Length: 279
Image (cartoon, rainbow, N blue to C red):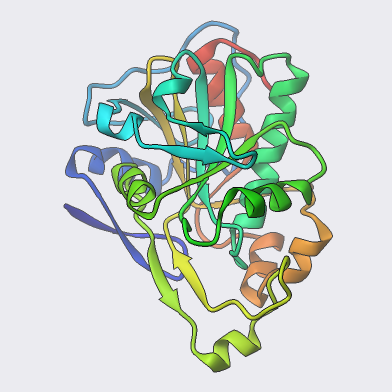
């Protein structure tokens, strides 16, 4: 196992050695800060050898990692209470990111970007071919009713949110190189933090995790990865979630620290992988 540092509070996270070169490539300068270069409408994504990565021109890193069956078949449940697996979504290209609804620093911006990607895909009439999915790292709190209440804050519903069992989510995010660890708040820290956006009660713990966005192709092969905090640009987040952000979260909203990703990097990668123009 290789230890890398995440961009969130400099917590460490582990990734399998087979993906080490790809992650290092992403974190060492294949930044998505710049807008995607104009692309033609053909499939142009590089397909590196399994276990390696290649810089994507629009940001992030191209991979070629067939996802194992035990990961594809982990049970998930969406915001409407519908159970599914990644295996059941085979045939669609998936844009996936990690988050939790109780996050005060990064995740509201992640969700704003994923909402925008879902809306852009819907506008391109490509929703049957490309699915946008946020999967929580917080199985205990992020049950379907809370996921739905969180999604309802964003007004549109062109993307999905999902949870699962603690063991299942831990295995999923461990595979994708972003295991989450619980950080218990002291009573003083909980009282000093913004109250939960739904319950109005102090938040008792956070889930520390690396921030990433990935693309899985229609054959269930992991094809693209970008790391870092989401950059929302001129997009907006719901007022209720903005008021819930910590001081660090407000700084990330204005300008994320370290490397970051924009929706343009996803659109560029989708163009390369699927041949579908999304913008």
